[in-house]
Image 1 (spheres, rainbow, N blue to C red):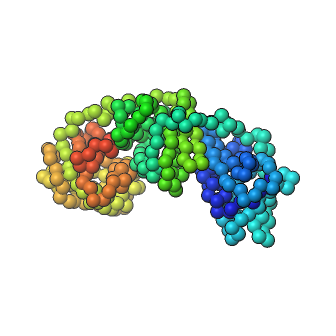
Image 2 (tube, rainbow, N blue to C red):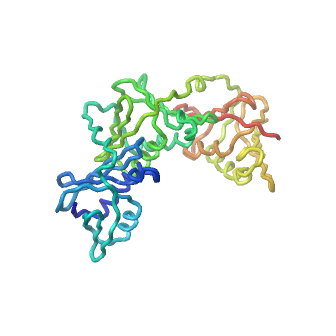
Image 3 (cartoon, one colour):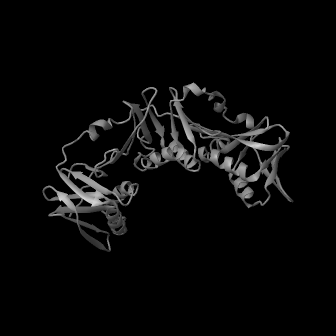
Length: 373
């Protein structure tokens, strides 16, 4: 292999496929980027076997065709320090050479024959596209949901659930302590449902935010596909059963409602979190007292206490409920500061429903804590 490419363009595309790669000491080839010449283009691929990302780079000149697998971190760091607009990448025996001006560097490679070739099976036709969405819009939706996805200990909820039905797309995440739900009207060709691994969502979000373009989405029985410009992201789907979240959302028994500005709640939570983030009884736990149009929040650590009080719009009998302040902050920080929030409650032992006042297209359900006063 011997090619001449634009340095910035190569780095940009290298950093895209990097997002599918994680260090793998057991199988080092999975820590590599796979690269091959295709006509006047360089084809790049990164994979962790669950998520695969491919893209291409236009070459200034292809002097010799070839294939290579290499670990990217040092190459990325080195190329960032070069000043030349164009660089030459070539193979010298089993070494990968990168030349920019008078600078020449040499990097070890891995047998490209050992690299997984799953990407060769991921060619799809235009008519199979299920839906199209603006990349920034989809990244924003993912960012509004991913914080409440479950951990890797429970693969069934370590994901973003996406369902298309009745002219709407429904997005859901939960870690069993909280649930985030967002829905959007959409013209769908057919109903669908899939659970996207959180790692895929994280990679998609980062890539989509760097582009302003249309994302084409389709999926088959085991894989979801995202196509944007010359980037193809393929993800295995989680086949485990996702929790029946509709039952939780349909609970309409709340008889206590607190209204508060988003900006005010964000401000007060930031102060309280300083004190309760090391709470020995329950990390980030604080007690919320509501009565006579006043909200009082009490929290403490082993060396300090905080008492916050402010007037709110409250309807219902007096209530004391303990909540994880960080979990509450995770949701409200995704809302515009000039909006009004509604917190709906029933008792100190039941869930709290949080959403923008007058809107229910983005809802948060938060379970209470069992704290001493």
